[in-house]
Structure formats: structure tokens, C-alpha cells
Image 1 (cartoon, rainbow, N blue to C red):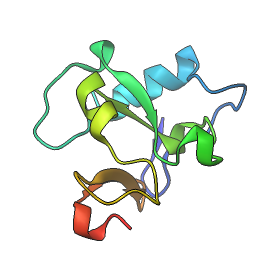
Image 2 (cartoon, rainbow, N blue to C red; image 1 turned 120 degrees about the vertical axis):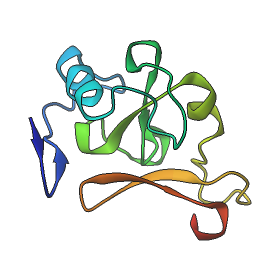
Image 3 (cartoon, rainbow, N blue to C red; image 1 turned 135 degrees about the vertical axis):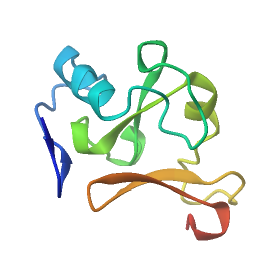
Amino acid sequence: IISRTQGPVDLYRFDRFASVKQRTMLAAEHPTCAWPGCNTPAERGQFHHLTPWKHGGETNVANLVTLCSYHNGINEDDPNAPPRRGRLTRQGGTIVWQPPHTSR
């Protein structure tokens, strides 16, 4: 269910919230919060848009990642805000953390 080069396969773009199938695929990719060092189980997490919904990000699996509520809140979404804590992004099908000095 996960492409080695593209990451999770795109299933739907119905609305802002991930579908049950998308959530299942995301939990298979990251059984815990994807933030480095966090072990919060995916079933207690939230599904975060890597490119924010308000900035045109789509609700497809390649643009979503499982994060705990804390890391979902501190992940930097606003490209115009000063960098503080970094952000997650998808590179080559893999979720990676970008430190604040490389986020913009």
C-alpha cells in the first residue's frame, strides 16, 4: 500500500479530513507520531497536511502525516512566519524533519 518512490498512494480528495482508508494507510506508514523521537501511537494522533489546507494543500495521502496533537500544533505551517521549531516534509516518498534554519 506504500510506493517506495512516491510514499503512500493518493486515494481521495473529498474534503479537509482524511478518510478511513487514508488514516489506515497513514498509520501503516507511521504507527507512531512521525516527529523524530515521539512514540505517541497513531490511533491517538492527528492527520496533518504537510502543505496546509489553508495554503492549497490537498487531502491526499502523499500530503498527510500522522502527528500527535502536540507536534501537530508546533509543526510550522506558515511560510511567512519566523522559523521556530522546524517542520515535517516529504522528500523522495519519505517523511523528514527540516530544522528551523532550513524550513524556508
